[in-house]
Length: 138
Picture 1: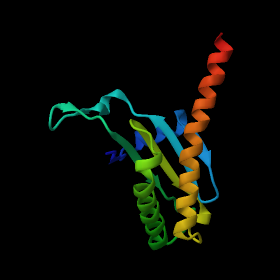
Picture 2: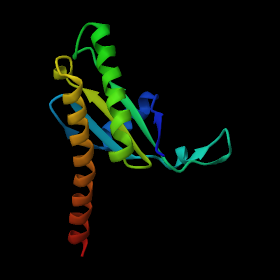
Picture 3: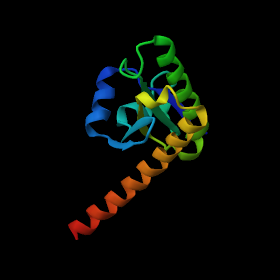
C-alpha cells in the first residue's frame, strides 16, 4: 500500500517548483518530481522504505484573505489526494499542489476531478517527453 508522507521544508517546495513538471487545471496546479535518494531510508527503523510518495500543499493569501477559506481548501485537497493517490500517484515521487482562486467556489467533486486529471496527465506527459528524448538521441 502506498504511504503518503508530508513535505514540510520550504527549500523542498522551491526545488520541486523549479525542477519539477507542472500541470495546470482550473482549480489547482500540480508539480511533480522524483523523490531524492535521501528519503528512501527510514532512519527510525533503519530499513529502506519501498512504497511511498510525498505531498505538499500550498494555499496562498491570493486565493482568499480569510484563513478559514484557505484551511478549507487545504483540507479538501488533502482529502481528494488521499482518495486518488492509491490509484494514480506514482511510487517514489514528490507532489506539490498549489491552489488557485477558483478552488474557493468549487465543490469537492470538481477538485477531485481536476486532481485526478492532473495526476493522470502529468505522468503520461512525462512518458511522452522521455520517448521524444530517446528518439532525438538516436
